Length: 194
Image (tube, rainbow, N blue to C red; front, side, top):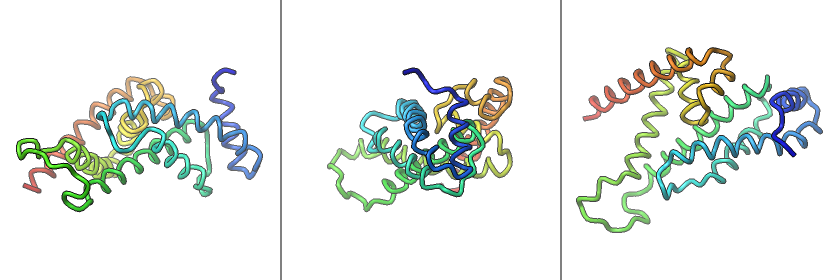
């Protein structure tokens, strides 16, 4: 059996939004496949030994999507955008949780030189990125969507263009400008914190 057509997912999402309960039974395997694809792409970018595994990310995002009865699904593109947001929230919450753990809880002793642990730094950076991305969304919503879809959702330039109904050139421009905005926001935040 081949990959489901984008139209099939869209039809089932619309039917489910319209109250057709049987559509959910057909939709679940297809949607789970999409989530698994997004999670694999994202997790490939994570460091080895990341505490949140791909399957956990999929399950958490999936539960949030299925339990979200208030979402009026428009199409597959809308689903991908909301999925990327759900994965972002899961990853940021995991990072915040790691960051807020009591100092030394469950940690191994390491030499002082190694204390600048990349694990903690990545958790902090992910939280800062989330805060900066929220600020970007307030000023440039489409740029924030591009960053979210590409970084958190793992979508290619072409897939992002399809989801947002814009050209690949527009995605590339928004990607470049959005990253510049985020870098400036995160570096100015770091300057204020120091």
